[in-house]
Length: 116
Image 1 (cartoon, rainbow, N blue to C red):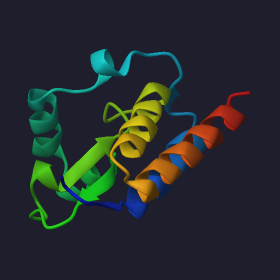
Image 2 (image 1 turned 90 degrees about the vertical axis):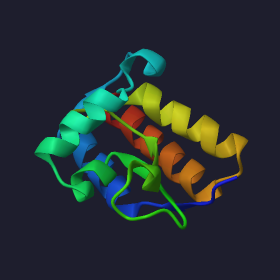
Image 3 (image 1 turned 120 degrees about the horizontal axis):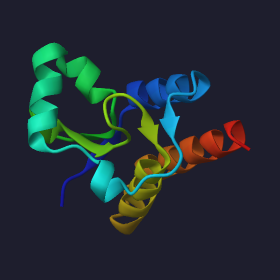
């Protein structure tokens, strides 16, 4: 099983998105999550740093500029999705990636407080 480091740049980015009200509160993440074609289109217009900001996890040992470096996506390259944060909490907890789990949980709480 892969080991993940917390991507603190992504945490900061998601907090910024929440403060700017760039979020989706109601979605089904399995439907809203992007496919490889959408990822490739994003990477044609943006660099790897921008791509990485949408992922709470960094795969330990993976090459820097590869999709395999990034895990636990939080949005659709435009807005953070509440359902994506829930999915991150669940998946990270399931596989014992505590730092990612706790960060996703805290971001979810910030989003919920901001929209209460």
